Amino acid sequence: MTERQDFTRLMAEVRSCSVCAAHLPLGARPVLRGLPSARLLIASQAPGTKVHQTGLSFNDRSGDRLRGWLGIDRDTFYDEARIAVLPMGMCYPGRNAEGGDLPPRPECAPLWHPRILQAWPRIALTFLVGSYAINYYLAGRKRSSMTETVRLWREYLPAYLPLPHPSWRTTQWETKNPWFATDVLPEVRRQVSLLL
Image 1: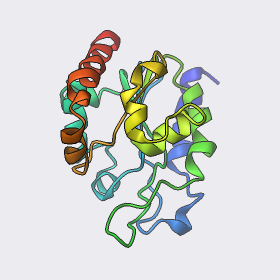
Image 2: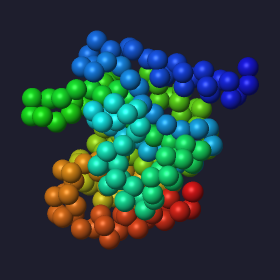
Image 3: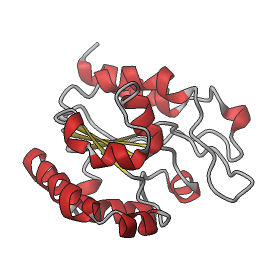
Image 4: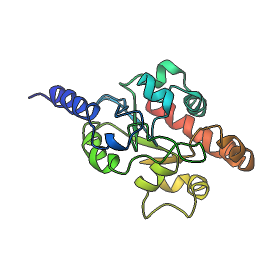
């Protein structure tokens, strides 16, 4: 079997996963993107309802915001040959009592991430978008908070660059942390332009 056939088979297997379907209010619909040629990886948390419905990663306002942070347009963002997107939980997890989304299902990343990452051998930089990705990939290396981890982003290069989640809740966080716009985002855009 060729590498291309292996990759196609793996993606079909991932997209048909139903390991935690009993816990998912909208059922299983794993959403991820990326081809073996991708150079940038966006490790995020879990799809929201709009992403679940459309099957397209970051196809919502948080995606618009993330693309703004990266300094790229939709066409570039959705070019799977250059950018891969791998959530910590690939299916919509449901809502909590406060109206926010539940955490990504804990079964997903340990089950799938190692195999998927092997199928993307050219990834040169991973943006860790949000606390769930930061906690998973920087376990033992992260700081006491997401803010402090992002503030010390230089410590995690060249493999990782931690970012907050680009939801509307981050608007207030950005106002309280102006260094994010002045120090982090220029480096994010520089890295993106280098790798794309």
